[in-house]
Structures are given as C-alpha cells and as structure tokens.
Image (cartoon, rainbow, N blue to C red; front, side, top):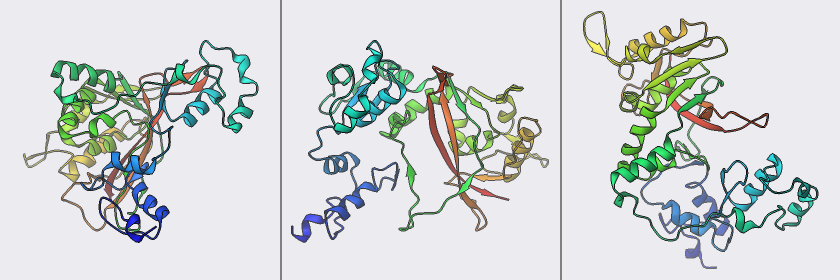
Length: 329
C-alpha cells in the first residue's frame, strides 16, 4: 500500500502503516482522549475505525433493568453476569458460557427482541420547539438526586507524551447531550443544575463548586452533605461565599479569591462529617491566577443518579465522575 494511504485524512500526518494510523485516530475517540481541535471529526473517525464491523453502533435494551447498552458483546455480558433474563426462563442460563465462547447468540430470546432500531441520517434537534426540547432535557438530565460517594483525595496528573491534557469521555455518559454544541449546553445545564439535588457522602463540596464554575453553581437548588449520622442542607452556607464580604468591605467569591475559598473549606470542615482536609487554594483550569507551585489534580467519584443504588442485593446504578483542578497550599 502506498505511503499516502496511511495519512490522517484530517491533519494529514503520515504514518508508517495502517495500525499506526488507527492508533493516531483512536486518541481522539477513546475514553481518555485528546480534546476536540476542530479538525478531527469524531463521527468520521468512528466510521474509519469500524469500517466493515456490522456490530458497531448497535444498541440493546436489557429486558429486566431496561438499561441501554452499546455493542452486542457488552449486552450479552450484562445479561449473563447480572442474570437479567426478564420474563424469559432462567433454565437457559445453563450452557450460556459455552455458547458465548463459540460466538453464537447465547441468550434465551432473539437478538431482534432486544435490539434498538437505529435512526439513519441527521435529526434536526434544534429545529424542535423549545417546549419539546425542554421535555427531552428533563427526561435525559433530571434524576431527582445525584449522590457523590466517598472517594480518595486528588491525584496529581500529567500531560501525555505530546504535552496534551487528556479529556475524560466515558462510553456511557448521561451528560453527553451537553457537548453537542453551545446552545444545547446552555439550555440543558440550566435544568441539570437547578432541578437536581446534589448529595455528598464525602467532604468534596468545594471541589465540585470550583470545578463546575460560578455560572453553573449559581443555578444550584440544593447541595447536601449526608452520611449515616448527619444530614445537612449546605446550600445556605455555600451561598454565603458566592458573594463574600472581606474585612475591608470589598466583595469577592470562592472562584476569584483564595481567602474566600479557604474560609468555605474551613466552614465545611467544622462538621464532624468533613473528616478529610482539602487545600485552601482550589483553582479552575481556566483560572488566570495559576502559580508555579499549583499542582493539577484529578478528583474521582463514584456517582449514583437517583437513589437506586442497590438492585437485587447488589450495587447498581453506579457511574463515574472526575473533576480536574489546580490545588495549592
């Protein structure tokens, strides 16, 4: 195959072979990916990487929990390991593992019964009246409660070998609708932050507030800290620091002033609930106040959308969320 066949169709960078070209393209569509640069088209990259794959793009709905799952492989694994056969006979469980290994459809119902029909072409979402878009945002983004479970402290992160900071894009991201364009983001975020209650089973409220930025934090309806012995609405406390008056009479906030951020951390840590300490200096990635001593850290959380944490005695409905901030002393 001639050399030009291994050139990236977007940036025209040349590669030694097809595998090297695919590795280059996968950097823009993998779970930890290079942020959009305006040149590499994610949808076109998927078409190139999965050309000839008849299973790519297929989605299935679990007959018992109704969860939508991408790819045949992941759907079969979900139904098999969780025993989600719905109304179908559990007797079919015997021998499924062997049929999985043989590559045949192993489940006790036809594939077509679980396969979700895929629409072809482009749907003009923004062409819908706003009232209909509002209903879709409500269905997709309003969960009632979003619970952040306890997790470890921030972990320092470094750029990749090319000096680029990677962006986290999980495969099952309930907020993926918000990254389509700026208008959809602005419309959807208003419902997401104002119609959900954010509950923290951890002392990480300051991390959350700084990471989502002032414009989103101002939309929050309720923020609570909660564990087995303590249930407190923290919304009033954190709002005191959105416009915080200093001793000299000037006004500031936690996004633009280290002292205000530190005072908020201290106020939250005064509870027995807040057993871990956070830096008094937390800065958004776009902050213009960075210093050489600030360290970029990633805070990872397990997240429950709604209160459905357990299912048949097992932990379920757990997702992942991560925030990156600069932290200093």
